Amino acid sequence: MCATPAIQAVNLRVEYPLGLFKPRRVGLEGLDLIVEEGEVFGYLGPNGAGKTTTIKCLVGVAQPTSGSAFIFGKDAQNPDSRAVIGYSPENPYFYEYLTGRELLDFFGKLSGLTREERRIRSDEGLKRVGLSDSADIRLSKYSKGMRQRLGLAQAIIHRPKLVILDEPMSGLDPIGRRDVREFIRELRTKGSTIFFSTHILSDVEAICDHVGIIHKGRLIKKGELSSLVSAETIRTTVLAKDVPDDVLAWLGGELAHRDGTQAVFHIEGEAEASKVMEAVTQAGGKMLGFELEREDLESVFVRLTGADSPDSTKGGEKEAS
Amino acid sequence: MNTIRRFFDNVSAIAVNSFREGVRDRILYVFIVFAVAVIALGKVIGWVSVGEDIKVVRDIGLAAMGLFGVMIAVFVGSNLIHKEIEQRTIYTVLARPVGRGEFVLGRYFGLLGLVCTLTAAMAVFFTIYQAILVWAGASGLNEAEGGAISLPLIRVQFLIVYQFVMIVALAVFFSTATTPVLSAVFTFVAYVLGHMVNWIYSFSDMMLEKRTPTFFDHFMSWVLKVFYYLVPNLETFDMRLRAVHGLDISNTEFLLALLYGASYSAMVLLGAYLVMNRRRL
Image (tube, rainbow over the protein chains, first blue to last red):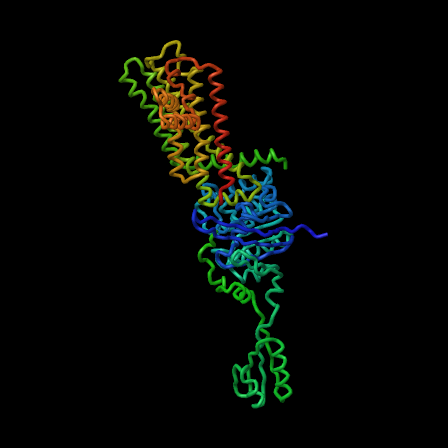
């Protein structure tokens, strides 16, 4: 028997009215997505691709024009489905007149925790994200990084089975990003399912086991990270010595560099590389080494979306929602 | 968790948070200081009207309580829901097991609690001030009026506070549907029209009193009648003159006013919920 997916979106479509006589803008165009329990799922896409819109549908903030989203089998529009979700929005917006402790207490109450549970878990959460010293300071005095960390603390105060994070590393310094990565790894070891959107590919490669790439409101690629990034060898670099001139002339197209008796070849495709290496050894040359260049996540992303690397847009404009 | 219990927990959590928001907004204290100053100044005007000190103090004091309460309701209420959407603070709230109806109700009760607390504080000050004036031998009070504290006076003060049940509901409704400026204007206009309902009704009848009323007269009469039923009938709650002159307010009259206010507010809040439910965030 198959377990119920943590997240399931079925033909999810979201349209935004732009004006009375203007065509509607499509935010999501028939999105189908499944995230199984226990996965750490990185949700990638260029600005305006529909990442935040997807997340808003999953947490019940936005209502889809058509299609459905389910959280552990429950309709995402049903408030009950959100009892198992912990959510931290991009650039968390919280009540500035509250202190960090009061904010956690408020969200704890909305999650059905008792007074004692709220007290204990608020302290734990603040300690976990390094805000114990600022617990009784109003949020209007918090820096962006502190708010981001408080956003993570409020997302897990009720120990949810599913944690949804919208751009959790956005605007953080390297230490802050490292802390968030550690935070996500820790949640994973505790068995939570984590779904997070990001622009930063290195973070995805560091912590995700599954990746989805969304482009123009459609999920264009989804799978295990390893299957996405190591599927093909895009180039092989071969270093050889004492290669006869006639062989060098024959391989002229692939010859990248020649230094004395050593030659470096760049060969497209794995099969072609084998032929070159065989020709070199048969002609009496010596193989010094070779290196396979596989397609990394950035290359996959750029190839699929036809966009610039999302890394180059980090900290830039916000996704239209 | 029990659904009903969760409903009350969510509404109370959001209401307490909204109340806290209001209490921590320093501008409200400016309103309070002004209200207290106006109530105190009633005595100065009382000197002009010889022998009617307390009556003038009561009239001005009760009017100030009503007006400043409305100003607070309009000032805070006009931005109540809109700000949550604009600043996106609503996202993390609705991402919890919280329905949009619970959110609207929580915000409503939070603001209502705030306005009632502040108006009640004004009422306490007003009563103490009157008591001091009576003790100091102020003129204009006879045996029938019962001194600084009397049942009609308590009832009229309660009704002043109670009318905010409706005003705050309207502020919340407009705040879900429109911008803060428009919301403030609409709420205040509703308050003003609410004190003119009897005039609106009479004018509607007058339109048809001509010998041969035209189609336009019939249409305008109908429009005014619709207005009469749409705007809150705040005249029901305005019993200041009776309190000032020591006249009684019957139990039936008092209870009917309470019932009307509760029913009207429930309808307006239902409207706010329907608007909120359709609103794209």
